[in-house]
Image (cartoon, rainbow, N blue to C red; front, side):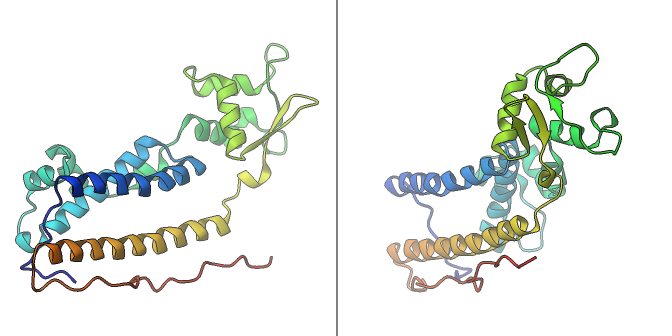
Length: 242
């Protein structure tokens, strides 16, 4: 653990450049995970802002104690505007980020829930990719009801990539995949495990880096770097037979 009286020195010069390289290496697989699950940049940006403000507050927690939150100080440390820092501290709820919809997800939601896109049984109807005749629903009509800024084919390609639709090449009919309408508990469990285990591992790596900085700065109270992760989560959730 860090000594309250011996904060880690801030990296500079070559060390700061190395930190940028290391962060980019960490962010690349995270960005790929975001794309795999349809999470977009503006959602990631909000998550990073929240994490940065939390980290900045931790960095000054020994000075702050139970006193007023130093908004300007946190802004300087994180590089986030004071108004944004204040907003993130006062309303840390991520419900807006969770509920934000992309054009592709909004199309999926409309198709699965709005009466004009359902059949007599209340199921999402199969749609011809292009309008066949006036007044007959089609995928392109649905796509253009969501946005006119993105071509329908682009939205179709994204839904295909995410595994939410399928297209019959012989009839050019597009259908919502049935399994896309029900959350997959196995995937949710794997994501929860990934977030917990990778998060704990990175926290342990960060603690070792802080210890190394303090040792390099000649801090006699610096703890030795640890070779073990503080995480006790060592096994991945297994698929259960259904």
